[in-house]
Every structure is written in C-alpha cells, then in structure tokens.
Length: 258
Image (cartoon, rainbow, N blue to C red; front, top):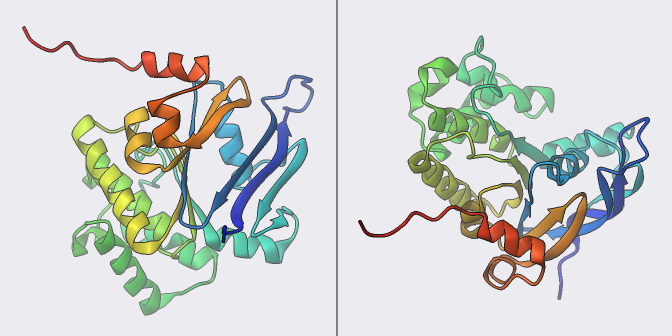
C-alpha cells in the first residue's frame, strides 16, 4: 500500500509580477511521509522558488501546493496554523538566520511561542531537549550566536526548526556555508534526526555528495522544469538526461598521486 503524499506540487508554475516568463513551469512532485527529496540544479533553475512555495511564502501563478491532500490556502488561518507547526525550515547561512541580540534559549524557543505550543518552564524543557538532540551542551541556551562556530550555529538553527516536532523539514542549502569537515557532521546529524524522528525532508542543494548521503529521491531542475527525477541511486548513478550528466561531470575531482 502506497502512502499518500504529505506535501505535493501539482502542475505548479510561478512567474514574477509583470513578467511573462515563468521561473518554474508545470512542475509536479510528491513527497510521502518519511521520504527525503533533493531538488538539484544550477543557480537560476528554480529550486529556491519551489521551496518558497512549499513553505507557503509564495503563491503559485497556476497549479496547487497540497498539504495532507488539501490545497494550501494561505488565507486559511486554521490550515496555516497546522501547516506552520508541521513544516519548518533550516536556511543556508547560520550567521544570518540567527538574531545576534538574542540568547539561544529565546531563538530556539521562538516557534513554541509563536505557535502557542508551550511557554515558561515547559518551553524551557523543550528547548533543552532540542539542544541536547543536536549535540549542544546544556549551557548553550544562555549564550549568544557569536559565541559559537558556524557548525554549532547551524545546529542551533536545526534545534529551532525541530523544537516543535515538525513532520516535515525543508532545508535550503543547509551545509553550503560550512567547511568540509563540519559539513559531514551536520549531514550526519540530519540523517540521524530523520532516522530517529521519522522526519520528511525536502532539501535544496548544489552538493551532490550531500544529496547522495541524505536523500532517497532526487529531482533535477533545468530552467524551471524537472528534467529527471527518481531514486537518487538511479538519478546520480545512471542519469538518463544530458543535463544531469553535465551536472555530474562538473563536480571537481582531485587528482590522485604525485
């Protein structure tokens, strides 16, 4: 029995106001519970626009975004309340996505307050658990973002995104701003969270090694259209489209030997 999609794009197109050219055109994708889907492609392929529509931050020009089988209605407060609790995001830059004026306790607890999930001591307990889950020490809650490394800041961002136990995590280039060693640790953390909590993950990434490590399914975008999609092992291991093959061939390889 196949699970119903939890998040779905149905023939979605998007064009900026005043422009006749579509940034994305006639895209249909579906993600079922517990799946991980990567959106890959060059800059300008439409990946971030798709992510904005999946987050409910942009309305499609045509087509529908569906959540639990229902069309996402941005003006439906009750539906959007359920959606915001179920869908959270980790952004690319851990330096820009955290308010430098706030302690980590307040940063991580923000979804609990805004979604009216918990406050006071109950919120403090949930923040402590979220920080522990991402491998940060207990005293991290009382410190400020500038006191942490880039990798630790991204862990704080992941703690904030997961403190309310969302069903779906959307990640926009979550490790691209990190050094290689830290990148591996954060990818391992995301994989562990996915395994232990059953998170559904949709990730935008230029890094095909990250995609191969974290995502079971991949959709390749070129100029706003999906040109290839399927199991990551097949898409990256035996690509059928010339554009995918060009993406793979552009990955730098270090020479072996002296």
